[in-house]
Image (cartoon, rainbow, N blue to C red):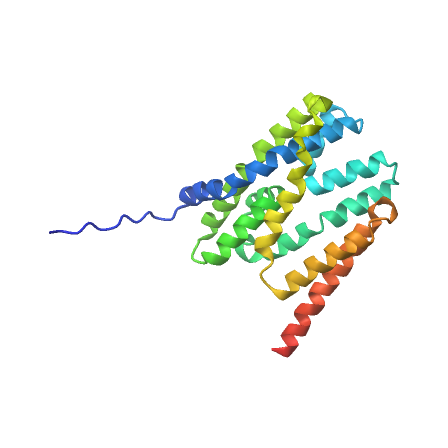
Length: 242
């Protein structure tokens, strides 16, 4: 009796793009309320619809957007607003460095798209995939990354627009702010795979809480700096021991 041969699906950029869409889809559950909450907070802070959407489309960095708006409401100096927002987004520089071995040889226009689409969700799912599937070609890696970004981007834009339009009509009982910690827990937990990562995360969390009383969020700046130093020092110490 003849046996059937398992069907093998060839890996192509189109196939990897679809896999990227599928991998990023679960993040919609937190991206939508996250964007909705920013739209509400942005309008409550006095931003008009165009300004709220410019924040979302051009900055496209939820944590930095919330930070900047809160500091603007607190009448913080422009320098503090910019410095704190940059500190919150400093992780993007580290994201870029770790993606370079995988996407650094792509054409300039593709790297520009990757730079724009480099959000926590696309980075997290793509890095896990790239490290597990080292046989992927450059076009396949680019396609996977863009798929993981393009599945969440419309929901980020659309939910922010909806939040800005409905504004304060959303009742407090909806508790949309749950999306912020849930989003970052979902991203950080899988990334804590080495001792330096755990040390950096622990130090940043402890110091951010301990220094929360510092004005204009400057405690967050200090916590981020010390955490990076702690993580780097731990990595160097482990390398020397090995």
